[in-house]
Amino acid sequence: MSREVSLKGPSDERLFDVIVYLIAAVIILIVLYPLVFVVSASFSDPARVLGGEVWLLPKGLTLEAYTSILHNDKIWTGYRNSIVYAVVGTLINIVMTLLAAYPLSRPDLPGRKGLMMIVTLTMFFSGGLIPSYLLVKSLGMVDTMWALIIPGAISTYNLIVMRTYFQSSIPWELQEAAHIDGCSNWRLLISIILPLSKPIIAVMVLFYAVGHWNAFFNALIYIRTEDLYPLQLVLREILMISQSAGADGGNVGLEEKILLSESIKYAVIIVSSLPVLIMYPFVQRHFVKGVMIGSIKG
Image (cartoon, rainbow, N blue to C red):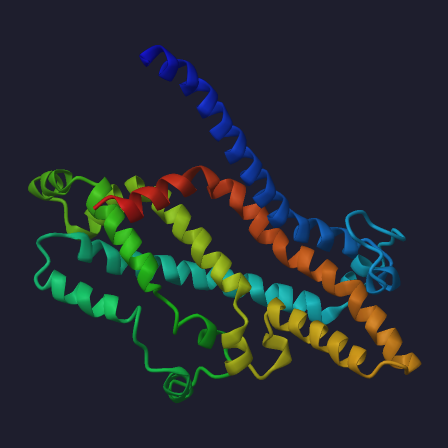
């Protein structure tokens, strides 16, 4: 009996592996196909894209879309604004999250549990859109870049993840030894905590930067000046032009607008995704370690 079980075991494991690989392959195809389609459409004749001829490979290969982007001032202005918002916003996010997470990770902080309960409540309850707008307006931040950065300076989820990382990955005994040697709290944070927190900081940089880069709803509410539009709002306008033109088809001028918007919207998607795709390999080696330690341990 035991011999039969041992003989059947490896075959069952191989069958399980085959099923897992097949499922993984299907998921990869489902995830990759939209990206492949967008890349192909950005290099294809827009008329053939609208005609539904593009499925996988480009049809009517052309660089017209990317040429249009290079000559579109709004796109470059939006690109510049998004980079500024992402860099400045991420820097503020990391500093504020560090300054909040480290004290909350220390067991000698008075009222630490009560403070964490208050912080956690903000994940489930908020003032709502109208009170938030009135607050931003009263602070004089409407139609400024700070309306997109200051209200979201700290993400509660990221704060909890970073605090858990400090608790689980940096021994409290090490901090006590530093204090005995005369190390101040600021010196401890800068000289000991930060060098040991590179994985979680890299993960937080990726989370915050991607969030700023993809955000458009706050800009839609608070930004009025087109020169301050992030790239996502510019892309939204392109899509709206395409949809409105398509609803009023039959006019030659409108058909030209459809082709123009169709020729650049896919290319803008590719161009707008490049910074994130470029940044990810630099933090990828820290990504899994930082997330797993920061969210599971403790």
